[in-house]
Image 1: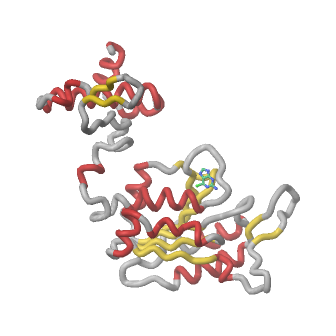
Image 2 (image 1 turned 60 degrees about the vertical axis):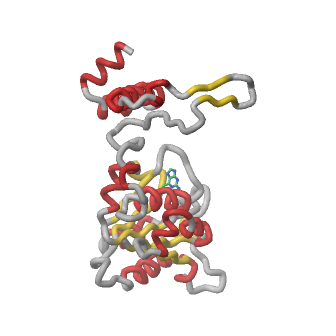
Image 3 (image 1 turned 180 degrees about the horizontal axis):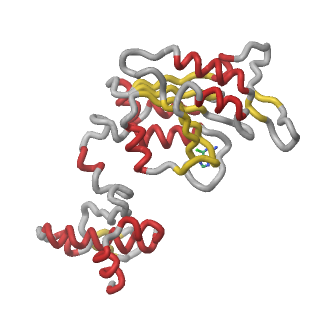
Length: 251
Ligand code: 6GU
């Protein structure tokens, strides 16, 4: 998969060299290209922003550097990419990012991310882009970040780890939180009894120490349900089956 990112803070995306995503890049599963928006300005100050028409607080990103940066990205199409990327513009005013969207985007051969800063990007840049490629404004959640870069780190990690060969154990992808619509069950490792220095012996649930795999699966499913009910009740009515909801009532 090819991923182009455009930002005025390309260094913000340096963590994409690390860990599983960094390894996927070195193994050429992922071709991540980071572009500096200021390289597409033409004045001495490399200006990317200006004051908003109509007044209001803050600054607005000018459309011209964006059309030039995106033209540069479009011109880099090759045999692997198809004609144009899906352009993702991170912002709190977008559709909500989700595991389902990560799967959908992981099927695309080419993604581009346009990181806005300040109060956002001149609307005409979106119009220009939408005439040339699919454009999606995408939000991580209902809070405000200073710019799109941190959101790009999150989305590239969520998408990249779904590509074949990025996460070593493909099984570890299936029982995770949000796969199947429920949160993950609690997990434990050795020792079976642990004292954290406070004189309290904390033990691993007995069912996990026996070899009864059906009992373990049932316990884990029940834990996923009770945990989802406690932390994310909004997920339950879409994820859980009718019999799951009856079980919760009796728990
Ligand atoms: Cl994707 N971008 C910004 N700037 N703020 C956000 C966000 C994205 N998601 C939540 N807040």
